[in-house]
Length: 215
Image 1 (spheres, rainbow, N blue to C red):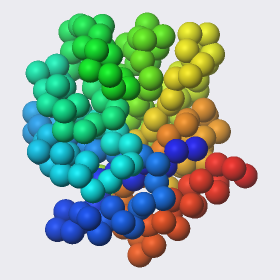
Image 2 (image 1 turned 45 degrees about the vertical axis):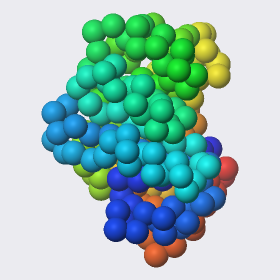
Image 3 (image 1 turned 180 degrees about the vertical axis):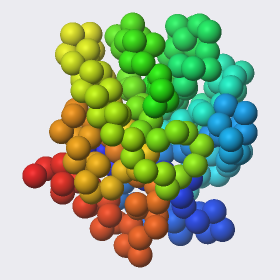
């Protein structure tokens, strides 16, 4: 199980210190919000470039923006290792996948809680990960939506047929209990924000998720 602490919940007044607190994490999850697709604004490529300057961890960039194709080159140039865009924001997902492949980064597609897996199933052979939103995107600290487990299970069955290497990422309301539920349903990556950074011991919280999935 990969645990990806969400930078959205870090201390933006002291990001370097926040990064040190989660140095055991293989990935860091970076939420990019434009105030249009989701009702919040976060960071852009300049900030991600700053992240890259003081960490070698995988930067898993989640584009919660209305026109991802317009900005993908900037986010890759800034140091993103993996780029995930929302299926709800693009008319031609095949084109953006092609462009991201040419930029030599891993490609992900995300679905909101109200979006059917049918919207992404034909893309499964072409991508590296599917991000299942288990809360409405835009804000941290929300409660896990249980219907996400059915989506995880459905995607897990589809990848057996079309792409066994596909990673299933889950973002929203992750804690010890929901993390174990997601793992049991087939998840490979848990994005955890307030659960990790809201603790006095973030590394312990990371281990708690890893421990639970090994039970």
